[in-house]
Amino acid sequence: MHGTVDGFSYGLVTPVAAFIMACLGGALGLRCTARSVRGGRSFKAAWLALGATSIGSGIWTMHFIAMMGFAVHEVPLGYDRGITFASLAVAIVMVGIGIFLVGYRGATPMALVTGGTITGLGVATMHYMGMAGIRMNGEFEYNTLVVSVSVVIAVVAATAALWAAVSVHGFLASLGASLVMGVAVSGMHYTGMAALSVRLHGAAGTAVVGGESPASLLAPMLIGPVAFLVLAGVVVMFDPLVVMGKPDWEKRPPRVIPAPRHRPSFPERTSWAASEPPREGSASPHDW
Image (cartoon, rainbow, N blue to C red; front, top):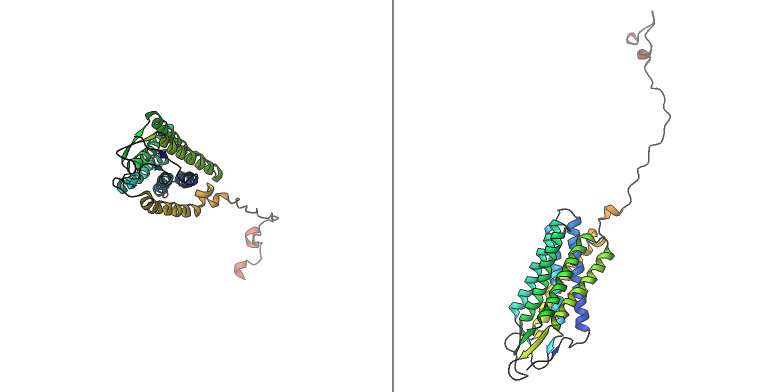
């Protein structure tokens, strides 16, 4: 018996909220990565780590906000706390590997392809690992072709995002890149969900097998990543190089030093003793 899958139990509320969180995490992560590239080696690793955590937290938060609207009508759902938290760690670590590669190697084709592939696989791994944490009286079945498409979307989106982080200058351009990243991550999520079908075990309506209910588990768990994203946003707001793409001192017009006024030149005054030898019979200044 197959269950009826519903990914939009709350209508457009969860998809829109998930998209906003994906854009926020992407925007903060991309700007932090750009800050590390343009700011020399000063705090480079710290900015890259902040960027990786921002993107990983944004993607993970996006996924589980979207999952709050997910339901199988015939059975209740639960979530395994350990697997759910592990999916967050996987997202941050694998995104971090890709960001550090590009941050230290630059926008070379090899670094972008390698970093984008690792980051994209991290996004896909987080998604399907989060799905594996769902507990119910049934099992998930996936369409292999659609799953492959979702992974390709994740890799392409991650590669494009890393390229934008080190190549796109200016706040508006980075904002556009963040919106594209939000669309791609959300598209990857719902493409993966489209590959899903549920085969039920036993009678419909049986109790959930282990785990915690979505409301009791997901809502409190989202508080931490959301708070982190807010804190990262505050850090970004107070760094002009992150927000505007260049430090304040590069934006100020160069100080013009006025040229000294031209003064008429007069011949140097020389002492009488140095300019004219004493005449015979005249007194020397040393004799005065």
